[in-house]
Image 1 (cartoon, rainbow, N blue to C red):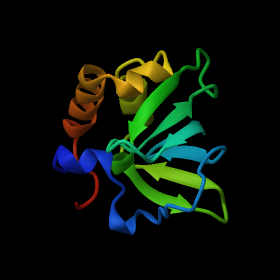
Image 2: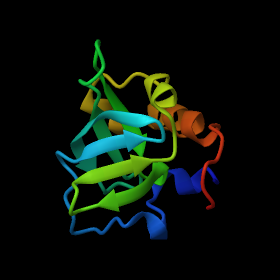
Image 3: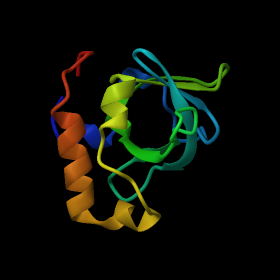
Image 4: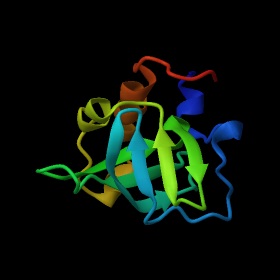
Length: 121
């Protein structure tokens, strides 16, 4: 996946602009990681903020739109192209102001871009 694509939903993901993903369950390739707390589709860096409260010491993580491999509106589920451990190891998300910080977004984008590809572009 190219670094530019990390910030856009793939055409086969099932994402539509009209669909609000807030509250949807988020599934990694190896299990549930939490739910969508917030969704941002503007500013050129569409992403999800995922509440990982299902883990013992839950936190929020920022997941770029390009990591989303599927959206099932009927089941209210979002699937990702990475594992639970890969999401756990992502750069720490602390505050919404980071979504406007180019250095933070570059760090997050670079992290997810470097992960092994588990689906075609």
